[in-house]
Image (cartoon, rainbow, N blue to C red; front, side):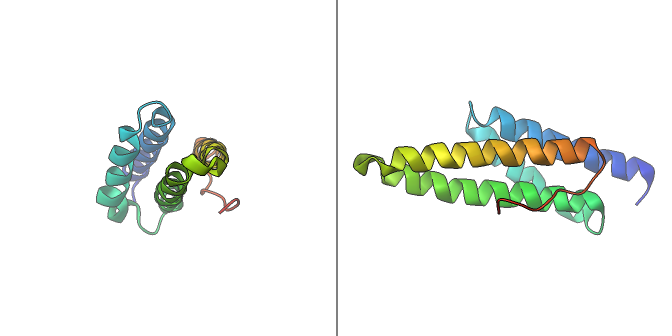
Length: 112
């Protein structure tokens, strides 16, 4: 991977983190972000940036599953706690990944 390719991959990962952050207000940007991850995943395969794409994809799917469970159980009140937990977890994942990307490090592990 050339330096230009790495820079482009890093910019795409940053764009997805921005889309995920905006997604807490405008949910559809999460979908745009995960589509970018899947379409451009092969471009970053085998690099440290691939860990960010994997991190972002995992954040999307686990967050979506948690959101579905939360919304479907809101009527018994536990859903509100699930939605709160999923939101806090999602914010943690976006911030942790974004900071690692900014430092030039692979996305870490932790909290799934």
